[in-house]
Length: 314
Image (tube, rainbow, N blue to C red; front, side):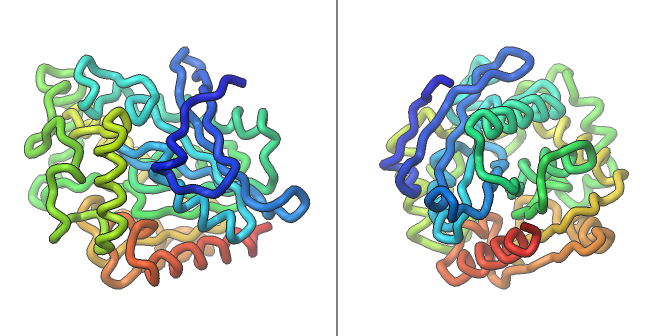
């Protein structure tokens, strides 16, 4: 078990945080981060947090603190192409990938690390944005989770409304084509929090959390990622189309979105939760894309609701 670097000063997680290198079935070395929950014997389980595009382990230090206060440990990952895991393009700022299904290999490595660490059970999964598509795919197959929660799950890519009917066809044309490695129009190599102003940003209405994200990107540029490639967009669109055709899993589920969500397409979220047996959709009034990094009252509502779901499923 090889230790990896963890910027605990930036993460602001609970005591005892560690990071490890894990190896995927196709030979990539990825970084995994873990924070313990409660003292041995008082733990309530482990949350596997599957992050979104452009995210990294240190971003979820506050989430680990919230769950530790509720008795849960947390483990998360730098997906391939993100954080300190290997980048997938010669331009390290470009959010690129080959096939969306490759993320399942990353998830396999994360689960194997959870087993190697003998993390407290039961295990739960909480996923954000792109991680929501990765989690949903796994939940339709064999998995080790007792319950699941989603934060702004990317079950539909945020493309202009007029383009949505043609998006899958366009994605198939772009996939692996001449333009596949180019940045999606309107994005650049600069990470979002370093070029967007706080006013009317699409992530959070909390100025302190925004400043913290800016500080992280400035203090450790290796963690930051710029805009996505057209290949990433094409793969994501086609994966969301495939997921839409699958039935909802039967395990307990809570999905949370902000009422001001502007990054993902929320229509598939409403449609999915309407046909999830026993599933619940919580819309947080005034929240943007990152409800876990919203104002204190919104954050508390989120974590209390997720912990209540996990507590009931233990």
